[in-house]
Image 1 (cartoon, helix red, strand yellow):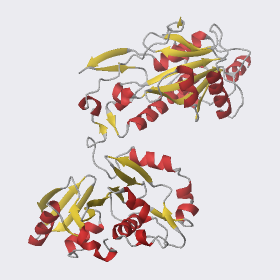
Image 2 (tube, helix red, strand yellow):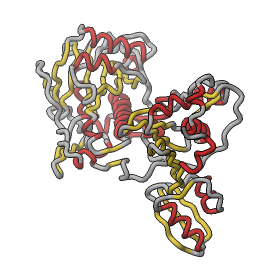
Image 3 (cartoon, rainbow, N blue to C red):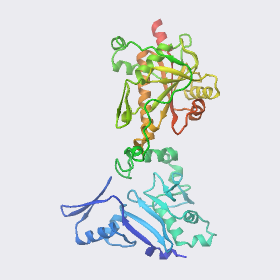
Image 4 (cartoon, helix red, strand yellow):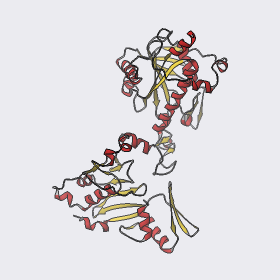
Length: 454
């Protein structure tokens, strides 16, 4: 059994991976995106950096160079014993001071533990490091009650708990994370998603993040631009004549300034199938499709990350002049609707109920546009940020729909909720392949009717 006081000789420090060095103006510069540190150039500095970049050195060295590198988060720390590697602490940034503890320490609500390559990876958007645990029992022993003398005396378990505290994984149950608004306003999954879908401290674009085309490198074929069709009846939509729109609708400024979110529709003057078709044509149709290196790229009226256009629109029609009710899929390549389910299908009814509640009006919309994403179109190319791109593209689509509704005199409103489970049940699509990501309601406007009366 290794005692806690013996841990120094079983702890090795090594320069973090991906570090470049350069000598300039009498200083040694170390760079590892997005970090930079400048050290006085000397024989000793060169010697220490060479040792740390090689096999590493026993922890505990207190020379100024090592201390500065350790303090500012440049050194990986490996903990081991006679049985081999136990856990590794990989810094992401400089450590913050450990806050005073006034209550019971436990794992922070923002800490996440997951399996990776046979080990456990402990991460948190608030921590200064990631910890990879190669012996799972250590994690349990680190939180063993004081009455468990065997676990409490295990030096590696003690060292792991000390590292969890020093790097920000432990929190006081009565401390700032429980009391302060700046923490409480973030749900754990939202803060982690925000942190991990951006570069942050982990590296640079292309290093496991961004448009790496990892799917091609892994041997997967790209998703085609055209989705698999539904077997239901198809409804051809009229192609609108946009010649006079440039004169009749006013400037872009006029359109945006008169835009309003309208949640209730005028059922005495229903939206028509031609209006719905024009809205879809102006915001979501495929103008062109071309192929490069085996990947199909799309041109559409709105922008989309990577020109892959993963979003699909599913109109749920309840009351529309010239079009029967039902859940439809908009075929943006052929400007047609294809029936997916009748409107009285239980999952379709649930989507409508969620939309009516999400709009705060309680009214069933004349048309609910369900936005779905064929995520493979994006995620085959983008690594670490694919879903964030999908959500940003959804916001762009919402803006296009809202502006076009304003131009056409329709009532439109994006919603903050959607029922992804109901979408899956209604369409039978694999939710890992195509999933619901948003809802937008549209119908006829009372405001337009009132303007005509005036």
